[in-house]
Structures are given as structure tokens and as C-alpha cells.
Length: 211
Image (cartoon, rainbow, N blue to C red):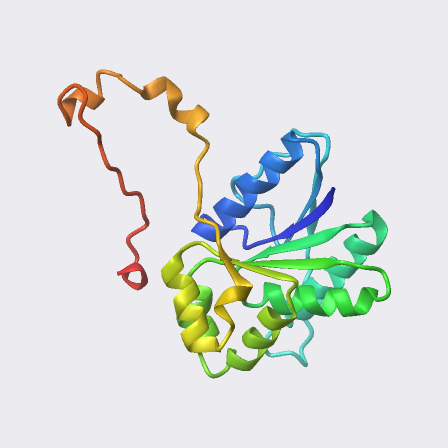
């Protein structure tokens, strides 16, 4: 498949998951085009079928706040048209889902499926803000598929945005277990647990919003 992936390029969870997914899909033989305003910090372009497209946001004196969502939609449409993308997978609803839906409408009748993955604060904080509520709801309803990283996030989306629960598929975040195989049974583990005991590890940036 030819897949577009749009995310924030920072070390936040949504950007990391999107980046790792892009690299895994490219390694599996898909053609993947990552679209963002900067190169994601975790993105390695070693795979021959993995590409990055930068969104350039012009700064005009008339615009007190540069319209990133419009520049993103334009870049999505451009890449999808020239690369004949099959689908656009966006991570974090605001503004990526709205931009993807706009790009799809620009491209018509050329088909472009839109998949939106919700990661948390894009719904519970940003998407629920009155300034973004209607556009976020529209972007999700116009998406061809919506996924959430947890059941609680799906419930929050249903409650706060009025989306039907049946439209949201829960797909938890993931890790590549092969990457960590080498540390199993290491001497370091014995510092924290007896042989045979399991260790539960939580990794987070511990920002106040996560509490």
C-alpha cells in the first residue's frame, strides 16, 4: 500500500507511535510518506520506501497566528495526488484529522481513505475545548476509520464528542518485543526482583496533565 502518516514531530507519545509505525510499515514493504512541520525525532529514513515531506507554514503579517492546518491540508493533498496514496493515517485529532478530511475533499474524485488515531489529550483537553469542539467532532465523523489507544479514551470520546462507540476501534499502543529481547534475564533485573518474578515498568514524561 501507499500510506501517508501525519503526526507531531516531538517526543510525545503520539509522535513516537506514529514514527515507529511508519518505519515498521516501510520495513514490511509498504510505501510510507510521513508529513509534518519538522522531521520527527525518532524517524530514520534508512528504508528505501520511507519518505518525509515537510509542511512549510508561511508567515504573513496579516496572520497573527500562521494557519498550520491549511498548510498541512495542502501538503497532504499534494503528496496524496502525486504519490497516489491509498490512505492517510493521522495521529492526534487536532488539527490533523480536519486537515486530512479537507485534503480528501480537495482530491475528489481521487479516493483517499482517512484513518484517525486518538491518543488522549487531543480529546480530553484540546478536542473538548469549545474553540475546537465542533471541528474535532466533524473531523472524526468524516474519517473513514477512528481508533483509540484505550477503552477509556473511546468512552471519553463518546461522552464528550458524541461519537458512536461502534465507530471507534481500540488498538493499544505497542512496543517491538524483539528490540528488548537481549535484556531478558540480565543481571540488572536481579537487582529488582527474584528469579522468576515479573517486573512491571511504567515510562512517562510525568507531565501534570498525565495525572
